[in-house]
Image (cartoon, rainbow, N blue to C red; front, side, top):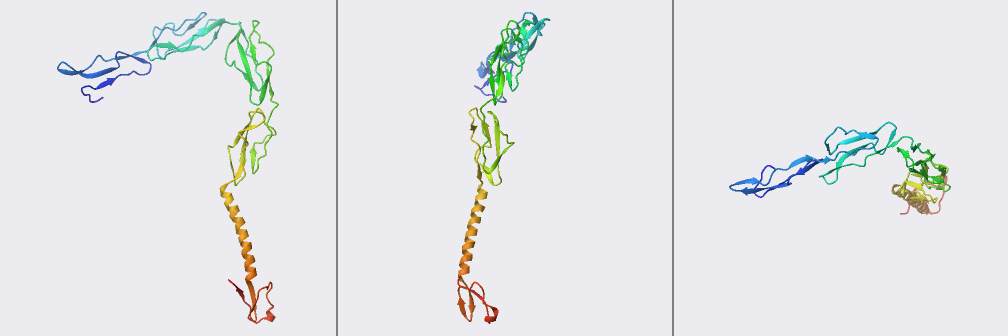
Length: 293
C-alpha cells in the first residue's frame, strides 16, 4: 500500500507453513490529535508439531532435535533382528493453518522371521501386495489382466506357519471373445485372428471414405464391441465427382443421340434425314453438313 486515508484497512496473512499471531486487520484511525494504525503489528510464526512418536525396537532421525515445524521430516529404522512395517518416514503438516500434525502414524518394528515370503507371482495377473512386508495374518488379493479370468480363490493369507494358504490362483484366457468384424471400404490395423475381452481394434478407411464414428472399439466380456465397430462412409468430396460424372455421361449420350437425328446430308439441294453414311463423291457435285437447330 502506498497511500492510506482515514478509515482505510489493511489485512495481514502469512506464507505457507506459518501461522499469524495477533489480529489480521488494522485500520487507519484518529488517536488524539494525530492519525495512526490501530493495534499492534501481528507476527508470522512457524507452525509447530509435537515431537514424533518413538517406536519399540527402533528409532527415528529426530532424536536429537528439539523443534519440529511445518515441513520437518523424520525417518525410522529398526534394530537388528527387526523389520520395518509401514512407511519409513513421516512429516509435519497442518489442516487448519494453525496447528501442526504428523502426516501419518509411525511405522512398526516386528521381529524378523514372523512373516511370509513374497507372494508368488502369476502369469497374466498380479496381486495387491506390491512392496509390502507380509506378517502373519496379512492377506493379498489376486486379479487378472484384461482378457483373462481368475481360476481359484482370489485371496490368500499368511499363516502362523509362515506359509501362504493354498492353492495359489491362476489366470486363464477368457472363453468369451469377440469375432473379427467385417469392415466395408476399410481395414483393421494390426488384424488378429481373434480378440479377447479388453483388447481393442483400430479401423482405417479406404481413400475417399471417412469414419462415421470413433476409430477404436473394445471387445467386451459378453462378446460384443463397444462402442460399435466404426463404419466407413463416402466422403462429401467424393460424392460430388461421382454424381457429376454420371450426369455428364448421361447428358453426353442424349446430346449425341439428338445430334445424330438432326444431322442430314444435302444431295442435289435436298436434305436426306436418315443418312448414316455420306453419299459417294461420284454421285454428288457438292457435299456439306447442315444441322437443324
